[in-house]
Image (cartoon, rainbow, N blue to C red):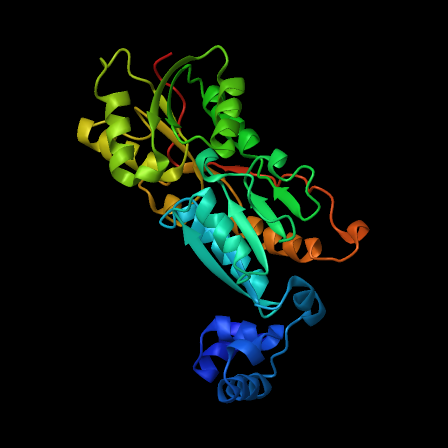
Length: 340
């Protein structure tokens, strides 16, 4: 092993879960971990030279050593990036992250009130998943969400991404290439992150000829293909958009599939841009031009905010943070419009 040992290393050597390691180092072991198991974890930690980097911060977070990350769709590649960042940051303090998907506001409120978690991370929530019944005392951070959700709550904050700016940059890139006939595969999910993308699109697309088709980004590749067919296959060649903007990279994959079915070459006959910058985006053929949403940084920032929100003194708690920047990654799926 190289580098500083983590809670995951201790769990592997001790033959226990990472959550058990978190319990041992959070002060909750006496009630929830057997004596022999606790001794095995401590022996493994001693052998590896492991110690939580900020034990004092961990104790302020609470006694369970567990954080709950709630995401809309556990199969979404972007949320895997958020989890990776949150887990890496949590490991530094001997904490573990538990993931929940497909929840509604009542389910989330029950989990928040159960006493099982020291903090709550809620990522890219749909409006229908939100209610006003979360406990005020539990540190809660909304990720890629509306700052209004945390306004007026001492132990809540929102960490935004500049998704609107990222979408505007993608559209401006296409306009700079001479594209005036744009297609937009727009999410039908009712969530702040997609409203921000829509606002960014509209601002940058002003003056262009736009055709929009709704798509459920939680519907996966099949929904993406169906929307792409509606946009590209149901119109004449003359009316077909020469560039397509997608509300995420999985939707862009659907455009690639339909373009192949129709014999459209990317980018010579059809430029495509996405948003998320999932790992597979660089593996598309051609590689996808997309907007990088820094999921790992988002998850890590959320964990740091949770720790700061746990401070006993109100003045020690953080202010509302600035949105994390996004970046356009230009690859091979966009080219100048040759039909002008």
